[in-house]
Length: 133
Image (cartoon, rainbow, N blue to C red):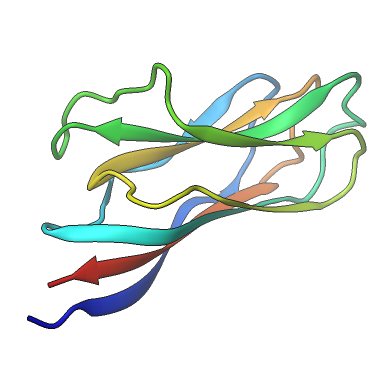
């Protein structure tokens, strides 16, 4: 048996406005049957905020597993990553999610700051390398 390696880029959030302490939850992603994912990365662009966020604030990303297609969204204790923000500037965040994403999941991009993002400011992508037999 030969292994097949396929790179996949999925856009989860496209030009969204995310208000303070709110999240944008993507549609369902299906990595495919009998597929293992490795080299999993998330990329987030935030073009700006209504004003500079005050205090210890962050943009966060969470993987929200589903047990089956259109199944229960397991959003408690979910794996995630966060990045600090302190200014009203463009941020381009990248972070490694680790290997082995669930077959079905949704991505949640959270604005955990004291300011709304600018209109259409947030875009999020996940890049995975799929390994299949």
